[in-house]
Every structure is written in structure tokens, then in C-alpha cells.
Length: 366
Image 1 (tube, helix red, strand yellow):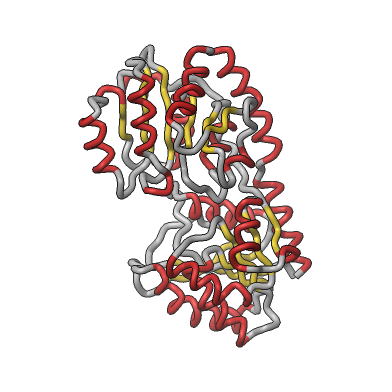
Image 2 (cartoon, one colour):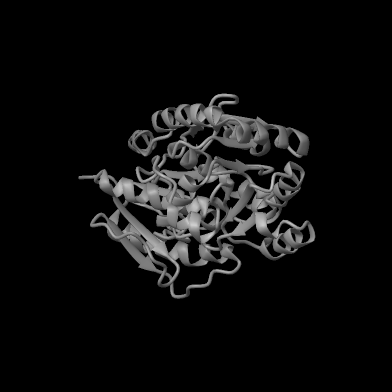
């Protein structure tokens, strides 16, 4: 009999570009392709990629606010599903929102191994929940060594029960010509394109890029923000105040299928985050042959090979960021060289095949 996994989720949308949801969508889909039967609970009417090995039930409501309330629906689902299916593993993607239910389930059915995936640790109520629930997990998967070290030092969880498994990159992310349609749409002919992909939120530090762009001063340099978020309105106001209206573009929400075109449009990708559990956009850009610049912190330093696939920049140091971007603006040969190295590096190191193979090994051992 094949492996059975239960994995309640707040989202598995085919169109989501939220890092955590993208990760779980890709993992769940590939587990199903590997012959694993997966049982999942989603908030009411949430979309997902259908597969013969994926069975989805819906919670009675769609909005989960705050998302911690999801646990109230997860617990009865876990009990009912285990009685019917006797699944082998309980997989917890988000310990803050599913962990409390998983902890109670573990008390009721201690024979079922519980595995939790951590992208990065958070503060406030989520940190308190972590401290309460983490001892009920039999094994943890961390998406980077940075996250693993956070778990060990902040939550005192045994190192030997944590496995680091990097995210993979979808096969759709590969080099290609610059899309003329997008060049015409934003009037980008002859411009050097700096791309930011991600949520416009504080942790991603998108406003820092406006200071950098302003200091670069090159009117043929354009910054594209691909994504939405709570800082969008303030960013647009800051663009106006700095007189950068002609040099900054906002895409709004980007469908997953359109992301590869944005990467191909870009000359470089930038990620000035204060903290990243993994930094998926760095590997997606690399797979498209695009050099990247990111802060020399958290997991970013595990993904960027400084001076090879791109640059690691000093966090908050405008001059350092400007200097590194100018190097790439002035040298098409350097961009091409870094892009080729990034492509080879990413497609060899960050694969979903490795990710799923390692996860299945852990599942079977437990």
C-alpha cells in the first residue's frame, strides 16, 4: 500500500505567488505525482491543482481571519480523516495556523508521526505558538540552514531532528528572449530594467530600492515592482515625491504564468529583504539566466554566490547597492557571464526532484 499523507492547507492556488503557498502547491503536486496519496483541508472554495492522488475537503467558511482560527476546523477534520483513511504522516506546513490542531491530534494518536515545515520564524503571537507546539513535532523540515539555525537557537529544538531541504525551481523558468509586448507596454526600449518580485511589505524592504534608484541617477534605468501589498500606496507616493514617475513601474498582481516573462524582461533581479527563509525569486531569476543582487543576510547568502551568480550587498548601504548595480549596468559581458553561471548553478542545486526525494526518505523513515 502506498504512502498516505494528511496536509491541511490555507491555500494551494495555481495562481498564488506567495512564497509559502507556492512551495506547498509545488510539493503537494509532486508528492501526488510520485504516487503518494494526499488528503487536504482547504478554506471554502479555495482553488487547487487537481490530481487523482489528491483528495480535498473544504472548511465551511472561506475567510480565515485571523488565520489562526483555521486550527478549529483542522482538528475535527484530522480525526475524521484518520479514522477513515489511517494516513501514515501528518504534514504541517504552517505551524502557526495548523500546529495547535496537530498538537492535540498528536496527543490523541501518538503513533502518527508529525512533520512540520518551517520557512522562517516570526515574532509575537506566532513565536509563542511555536514555543508551545514545536515539541509535538517528530521532525522538522527547514528550507535553509539559516532557518534551521533559527529554530535551534530560538526554540531549542534538537538539531538532529531538523533536515534542510531547499526549494526547487519549476521547469517553466528558463532563459528566453525579452518579451517585446512588455517592452512596448511600458515603453522600455533602450532601458536597463531592475526587477523586484514579491509582496510589497516591510520585511521585503521595497522602499529602499527607490533611494538606490534615485542615487543611480541614470534616466535609462527603470525599476519594476512586480507584486502587491500593504506598502503599495506609500511607495507610489514616494515615487511621486522623488520625481521618479517615469522610471518606476508597478505591475499589480502577477499571474504565476506571467512571472517568467517578467524575469526575461529584466536585466537584473534585486531582493533587499531584511530576512528571507529561502528567497524563491532569486532561484527563479537564476533559472532564467538573470544575475541577482540581494542583501548579505539570512538565507540569501546561501543562494547567491557572491561575484559569480550576482552580488551580495551590504544591508541598508545605499552606496554599496548603487556601486554593484552600476557594475552590471556598465558591463553587459559581466551580466551575461553571471547569468550563465546562475543558470547552471540553480538548475543543478535547487530542484524539486531532490526536494521530493529527500522528503519521501524522511517520511518513510518515520
